[in-house]
Image (tube, rainbow, N blue to C red; front, side, top):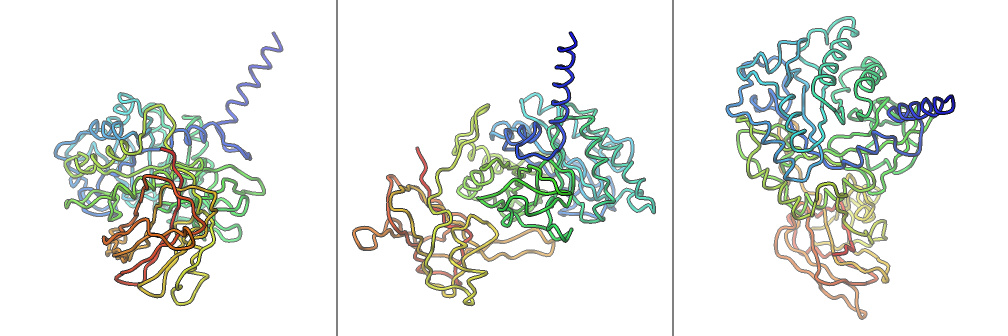
Length: 494
């Protein structure tokens, strides 16, 4: 009997220990479940939806929030049809407006003209459609008076009370996503206290804080995901965190998982965030904005859900309180194209035979290879780029002639014009005409030619496989010197 009792205690200790972040080179239980989910729908909805803003300052009257035909179940139904495994809902953005019935503020839905608890309706719809439910909660609060108190403990208590409401009244919460930490020194947030509170109420919940990682010697000097390719080099800015966030940057193809805090190494997967909007807007606007092309969404899906990482795509409801039909159609069509199926692993892209390959380029912008060298077109990073000096340019990638390929994907580094809100972006393609050649029988042979604008991400699928020692992109017309984030040569089994 004593042996059984000891065994039970040991099992319980292991189980409870697995819920918290401890030094490890392997994922714990919440991390495993995060990685297994893999693909979620982000939902930005709140005061900013009605103010036509990305960030508001907490002074907008509560009466401004007034959806005319609120349908939270429609949001979750779209998520289900689009193959998402979980829904990540903004419960409180930086303006402090709360989408649930919080007894700690009057800046919430129950004080608005539409007195409906959005958090409750979304959580219940998730259970109905078999999706998991996650919440975003802004640390920064531009409305709450205690945020400006001389004793910041008052505000930490306010957060603790609100988190307790969210974590005890709405069923299982698979993830808590914190944001806005940049507005205060790290230690003021008392993250260990908040983390412990969350784990006490929802032991399997994964907790993340935006801009998780920094350089060891300088907090607030953030590490871009392109640099996260060496284990145990960088440290936590926000500890504890169960996963890394750097909204909305894309992780490196060779993303690493080990990060240091006070001399110990911790395993941390990365969660990506993308907007369905091509203009990089999070809250829906009155005007219909174009969505990202399916080619780009497909390749970003593969990239972001690879290597043990996860992806959430933001699909924001409009002022009626509904997801727009054309945006819903886009993500549903994406799921069909990729072949996402419930209760099955997420589909993969294929073998990248060009990753890290040597390159030869016709020119480099400003003759600066350290910033714009051809190697950046195959390095696996989405924040680096090859940029040519001339508008007519070539990129040659050297390949293993034994490796077959049947697909090429090209991410163009477009000109970007950011509007005054700091978010809304217009991307302008430079590359107008181009072709692709392979070296075969001691000569260059063209296998693809286009007289159309390349687009943000061009995907070329060949009906048969090729093998070659080198492949060449020829840009024959461009409005300005062309630039590429990545030129990927891939073998994908049908």
